[in-house]
Image (cartoon, rainbow over the protein chains, first blue to last red):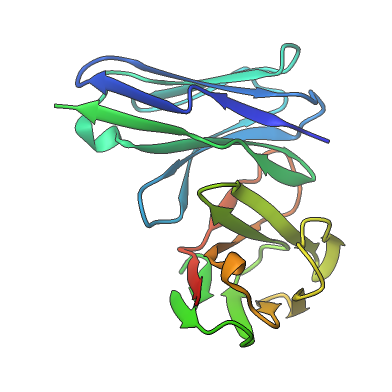
Length: 109
Length: 115
């Protein structure tokens, strides 16, 4: 069974700092790895999707990398802003999606 | 596109009552997922359908839970009888097939409270 782990569970940084969020998975036979953002009381919004054949994806201040051999993905958020405060979840797909527990991020002004 | 549409958005019901949650996936998507989210257990996959056929229901907690997908544009998740421990946010999500480039899209969730 695929296990997805996110460390740390919570993170607080001052505005302007770069954020590094980690995601690890146990089975490297994945179709893709996806990062989501969830605001309190809301659903999940997709941020980036990395296909199994790719090493990274970028969108604006966000960059996600994928290393299947080590079972890891990292989400980088450059120059964090208070509006980046949310919970970030990663999910690996190998048929169905398996989610990590998320990292709760607080960016202080 | 309107996105994944769920109803009701909020429901408060008494223990023992039947609860039916509804979902309309994004048009053209052929994979549909039901998730449950709680503080204690995070996001759990309950069941997923591919081309209206249930593929994996191993996450359905017990016989009180049932899910159907009578056609490509509609799915229901039913809890009968409901219990206080069923209180959670239930998300429906859809995806275009199982290809490597296919993103999963979530609805806004149905917030269920069983008292």
